Length: 182
Image 1 (spheres, helix red, strand yellow):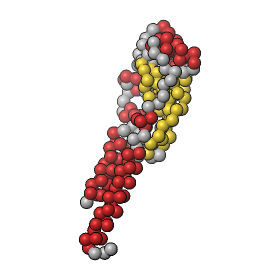
Image 2 (cartoon, rainbow, N blue to C red; image 1 turned 180 degrees about the vertical axis):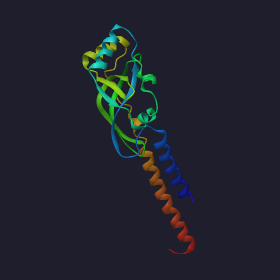
Image 3 (cartoon, rainbow, N blue to C red; image 1 turned 90 degrees about the horizontal axis):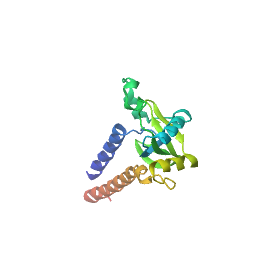
């Protein structure tokens, strides 16, 4: 009985991760950006914004976020406005399965980005741009590292299935002992 409860909990956690998360259920190695800081306005930020708008690449949103845009006027979305704030982020790739992250690693590192209706407009932060950002914000971003603990919680699913396996074997052994089928 306990093994069935564990199995149902595991299946419900997979369903919840797929339904409420922004990761795909199938195995993916997806590029993503995590927010580090929002840059304040000003003339130096305007220069960075211009470089980000016109000298950058488009990184699509995760699949669930795009499906949420269907049926909406792209211009009505908050990210579509020209006043969307310029942000500093960290570009990484994430390996996920069943809507749960299993590993992440650096892709381009620090980037400046703007949110658009279809994705992030991102530009890699060079040493010169990093010094400019540090002057604007008054903070150092030279040693920024990806917070890995946010991207490995999918392993709890594996541990849950191991728990289910051992509890199931324990229940079978008890049943055999009770019925005398040993």
